[in-house]
View (tube, rainbow, N blue to C red):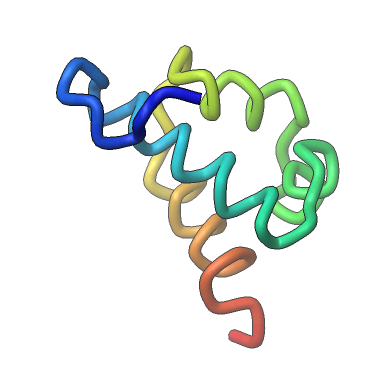
Length: 71
């Protein structure tokens, strides 16, 4: 994988790469994360690839599930 700090990446692409990294680190599949966020695995995949811009509620859900899972 290319360096995540590559200046050619857009903010959406950087978000997607970081999401994929943290999701894998948490041991979750795209399908499991999607289920936890009440969205499809396809949406998670598109966001991770930088093809879709995450909405604020999606990003907040990622924080809830991946960063602060006890809250």
